Amino acid sequence: MSPTKRPRYPAAVTPTHPEPKGNPVSAIRPAAVVVLAAGEGTRMKSATPKVLHEICGRSLVGHVLAAARELDPQNLVVVVGHAREQVTAHLNQIDPETRTAVQAEQNGTGHAVRMGLEELGGAVDGTVVVVCGDTPLLTAGTLKQLARTHGADGNAVTVLTAEVPDATGYGRIVRDEATGAVTAIVEHKDATEVQREIREINSGVFAFDGALLADALKKVRTDNSQGEEYLTDVLGILREAGHRVGASVAADHREIAGINNRVQLAEARRILNDRLLERAMLDGVTVVDPATTWVDVTVTFERDAVVYPGTQLTGSTHLGEGAEVGPNSRLKDTQVGAGARVDNTVSDGAVVGPQASVGPYAYLRPGTRLGAKGKIGTYVETKNASIGEGTKVPHLSYVGDATIGDYSNIGAASVFVNYDGEHKHHTTVGSHCKTGSDNMFVAPVTVGDGAYTAAGSVITKDVPPGSLAVARGQQRNIEGWVARKRPGSAAAKAAEAASRRGESED
Ligand code: UD1
Ligand code: MG
Image (cartoon, rainbow, N blue to C red; front, side, top):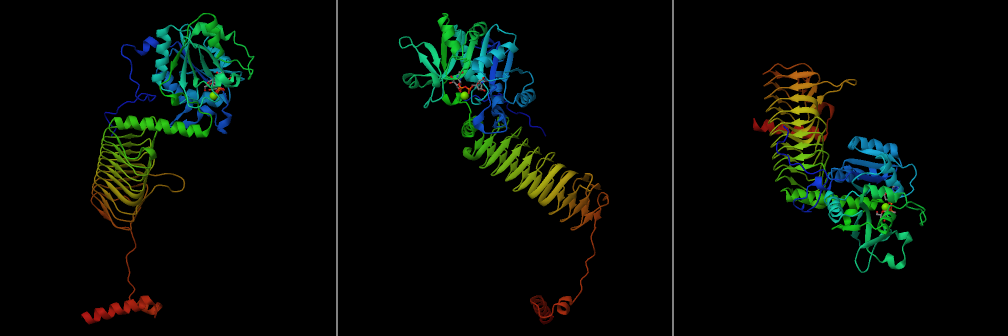
């Protein structure tokens, strides 16, 4: 049931940056990317290290790595410090090729890069790109643009800059008034009143010549307001030594925003989500209400899929061609087949076949597989259950640890009784079966092909193919019981009236 033509989205989502022709990634391939992620992120006020916070299904540092990987660097090193065991474990999980360098004390961005280069054996021959681990909106397109500018201009260092509405806290880009060339970066805390008026800021992302960087870092001093080794000082050092210093201006300043608190985390999530939905819509997906639709970077769609309001799609969820999901649905790692309909549903790890129907108000748990044209209806919960083609479980039922064949119908309010208090057991129902309403299938038990079961049955023994199983008490009517036991009650009067009507009819 796995969907066939699934479009592959790039690992990091780039908006609409056209790729310049004739400049392949190999031409701008950096020798190394160094990701700075040693800081604590105090303003997140969290037990979780800042770079491990998530937006759209990926950690902040995960987004940065995904963008950096698209440059195809020979080496990728992440500088870790605060909560380094936790951060390193996460990195090993998401990108085992990544190396880590430990910066035990956070003595500044220059010191952090020095630690990164040491991990790579000192000076690196070729381009070294430095990025921060907390800028999840930075796109591969912008990084490539930086690397291209760096190479094309023959710079010793190229800084990624942006014009921002409010530059407070950022390092300012100081340019030569006559030539416009970048002369220095001045940290907010060290800037003069006039320099603080500058709205072009340092994004914290750079491309360097590796050998010149290693050299210049040795000369960085700590005589600044924070007593730190500033990476930004490398710019002035290289310039004074007569090397070329350049800048690449980001088209969208929102890309370079670093996340420092939960407000910025939410803003970044909104922006990234918008980007993902925009891409899906341009690819032919109808998103009825982008404001209340949330998706992970790993979610994929085929054309003519429709997403209704209040829907959250996460993990490896995939919507097939013309599939409709929502409103008010939460699908995790769920495959929805072409033309299937999923309404007001919570699902985790399920596969819904083509043209099948789920909900409203269904709960699909891991291991649910619904065949083509099948139905899991209202107030139905399923788990580890394979439900065949055209088979229906329409109302108020629990199907756990079961295999049901094709074109069977499970009566309303049935329970697959899978748990004896110690172990889980399996139930098998064949094809073309019609089981009655309010059945209990006490596992392990098998209902053969074409069999029927009577309503209200507790099925504890196997049912041979083609049989009718009846497993309930015989009905007994005790006539006149109400008149004797509840004399004068409304029930007794109603019964009496009914019996009089019966007499007059005779
Ligand atoms: C830095 C820049 C500033 C720029 C801003 C962009 C310097 C001196 N300043 O300032 O010009 O406008 O970023 O957001 O570079 N880090 C380490 N180890 C350290 C210090 C920092 O790994 O010892 C990491 C942090 O985890 C973070 C990044 O480097 O990912 C930037 O550090 P941060 O302290 O946020 O620098 P800013 O003061 O914002
Ligand atoms: Mg910062």
